[in-house]
Length: 281
Image 1 (tube, rainbow, N blue to C red):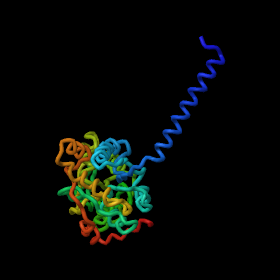
Image 2: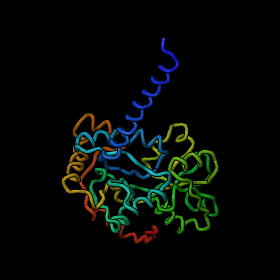
Image 3: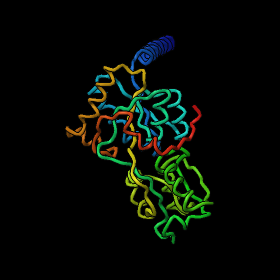
Image 4: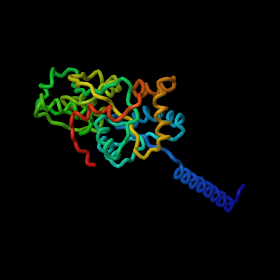
C-alpha cells in the first residue's frame, strides 16, 4: 500500500494533469472559431434550444463552419444585441429586419417558403367576447413592445376598435397563452405558429378571436461583416434542407416547411406600414 507521502504525491500529479487539461480546454475554446445564430425568444429558452440546436448542428456540418444556437432572455434584450451586432446570423421578426437592416446593416439571407405572418388575439375558450370591441377597457397581454405581429399589428387594430385597453408585456408568446388560459388577462397577442406549438392542455383553453392581414414573415439575416463565401455556404445549406429527409425532419422541428433566398425588398410591405417605432439604436 502507498504511504502518506505516496498518496500526497499521487494527488498532486492528478492535480497537475487536471490543470493541464483545463488550460488546454481554455486554449481550444479561445482559438475555436464559431458563428452565433441568434433566434428571437418567442418561447422559453429550453424549448427553443430543443427546436433550434439540432438545426445549427446540421448547418455546421453542411456549411463547414461551427454555428452555435443563441437567444436572449427577452425580446428587448434580443433587440439590444442586434443593435450591437452581437449575432453573426439572426432569425428576427419582420419589423426587426427593417430596423436592423438599416443599422448595423444585417443582410437578408432567407425566409420561410410560401409563408406570411398574421397577428392574432386569443381569449379564453369560454370568454363572452365576440369582437375586438368587447376588449375596450380590458387588460391584455403581449409578448414584448416590438413583437411585430403579436404586438405592433394587433395593437394598431386595437387602437382603432378597442381604445382604452391596458397593455402588459409578459416576455414571450408562451407566457401570453398561459396567462390568458389562466384568466389573468382578457386577451393576448400572438401568431398562429407559436400557438400551434403550445401544449394541447393550454390550446384547448383558448380560442382565436381575431387575426390580421398577412405580411412577409421572419427573416434570417447575416451580419454585414460576414465573408461572402461563408454566407453563400450557409445559404446553400438552408435552401437545400427541404430536399433531404434529415433536413425535412429538422424543419418540422421548428415548425417550417423550407426556406427560399431573400432580398431586403421582400419586407417593403412592412416598411410601408410606417411603424416608426424607435429601438434605441
